[in-house]
Amino acid sequence: MDFASITSSSFGLVIILLVWFKSDAFVEYASLFGCKKLFWIKNYEEGARKGLYLDYPSYLLIHHNCFLTRLLSCPLCLSVWLCIGASCVTNFDNFTYYFIITYALYGVMVKLYEENIQ
Picture (cartoon, rainbow, N blue to C red):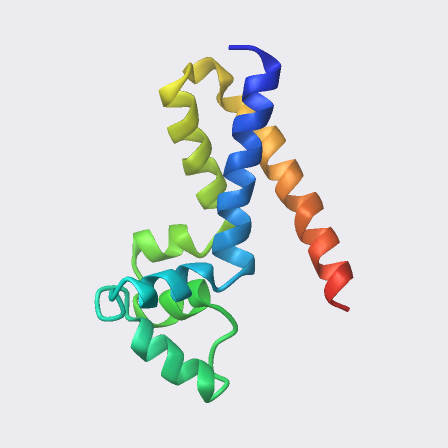
């Protein structure tokens, strides 16, 4: 696998991380497709209206604390597992490249995102 395809796959992983950690897209789509009860969206929305939660991953960590929710609420952890999945599909030797590119790009994008919000 060449560097260009690793980089483009890493961009896809960065998009997944940004959507999960920096937007409410998951909550919106889960609501749209009628999965509010399955993913505790109704409870999250009630708490968010009261100002109790910053984001959905924080809600999961506070109210449904287990290995999976800790993994889903940690950008580094989720990035590692997404990169493991991507490297299993292609070639596990590429894991290091996937991880370095993905996490570095994610850090840059978060920094740009936070600068634009202020």
